[in-house]
Image (tube, rainbow, N blue to C red; front, side, top):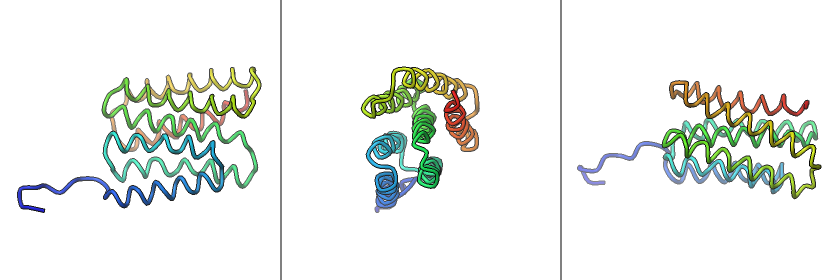
Length: 171
């Protein structure tokens, strides 16, 4: 590095790749392809907004839903996991542009619903999941637009979205 080059802020690329590979390996081994596909989408945000530790710190807790799935065998926990990832992508990409954040979160919801179609979910179940997911994503976008951007507010939005999805399982 020459003296006129400033050090790059953020996470070293090798560290990012190591965390990404570990995250996706855990998702694949414990959850299978659906969890891995949704998890892969989360890594778009750090690529667009920069490889920051804060992004990974916010993402990694999503694996708690996978742990709970493994402990309980409750396959429905895929929904709060997917909504965690959708909210994470939405708040992360909103740092660049609010529309990009909404589109990123919406894309995760579309992929989740496509997976549910492939899993042969019934039409009534898909309808409820779609309505709940869209309502949660709308709340995420509104919250991101009104709250000051801070790690704590992003964490609260993402956790709230995930917990709302869990509550939505009761419908």
